[in-house]
Length: 139
Image (cartoon, rainbow, N blue to C red; front, side, top):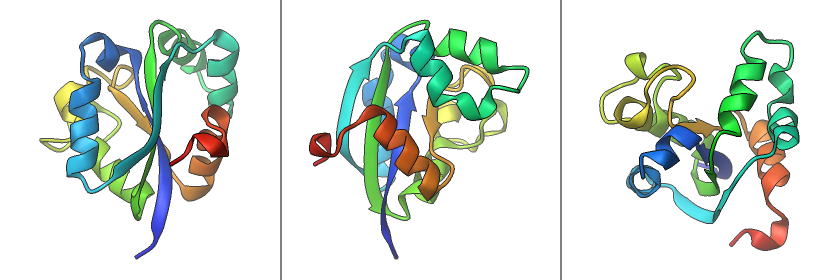
């Protein structure tokens, strides 16, 4: 097995519901450890830059508006096959289709307000981690 790093955002909906600690608990119960983390408030430019891959999609504007609507908790996770493992901990993008006990099933409301984001590949994780953290911030 390979030790990897992946990226997580606890989105504004879950932060507003005081869910950060519960999400972090699920991450740790899933065998991953936090190696960096902090609260931040995304600017519109940051949201657009982070989600630039979706800029041609019809949901892009709503996504950026939502992600700037309140504070988020960004973090870097580490563990064996961290990308795939965190995707399992998160559950399906649509909380209605997420397996019981997953972050999105427990804390998500709908496909947009689905509590948390996770990198979908190792390469994506590298970009996303670098977008929010400097190497010196990672334990």
